[in-house]
Length: 321
Image 1 (cartoon, rainbow, N blue to C red):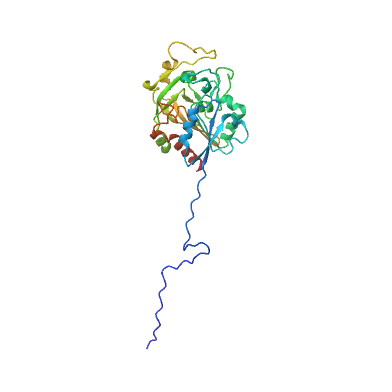
Image 2: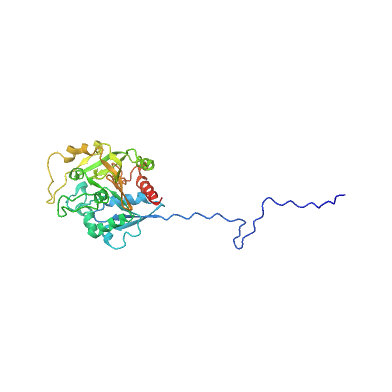
């Protein structure tokens, strides 16, 4: 006879995981992904900066991805003011301080014209911005902030011959015409871009607010990418024209408004551009993505409200990859 071996209990297919000391769970929990650091955006306010532009910009950029920091424009010249920033945003207002102008019915106390961003920054503040952008700070300029970042040379007044920041190789086309009391809604055209993501974002804002805005000329096509151009002149049904006053308080000129003589020159010219200055990206808007095209005291239509935020996010992600 063959001796029978007592049957053994079959082994379990999986082994029991021993309880970890002090953990109180039978299996290891997956480690939560580390939260990415909020990007810090500095938004300038104060002399030369329009209050409504600052307010609307803050509203549109309020999100979990960003930490917003309001910075008095006069503090830029101080050491370490720009140290913690990923992005510096300079919005609408006036880059110049050579005009006496109270258009749009502003009270003298609320009139930013004639008290420009360049004077508020001073040479130290301007040098600080250039140095930080070269080192990797992203600069976003809207309207006056785009003028400030351009290669514009001051033509009149006490600052005649002075240059702006020249963060981007663009200058301003007929400033005396298109920044001479011209407001309304403008339609933009987005050319075919290599980056489809940027094109989709910009496509949401085919109409923006024009308020003495920058109509740009590209000086170096190799270093500047045109993201949007002006499709046509300011929409006639929204157009409002005023004649600026000179330093003596009189109208600068009489007769037909200069804009009406040159309006078609803006068609096809750059409205939104992107470039790079050494390590830092430079994004410039001629018109206002943060204002309603017709009622500038309001936010843009809902479909357009995320343009500014998503463009900045897109470019920051490009930088980090």
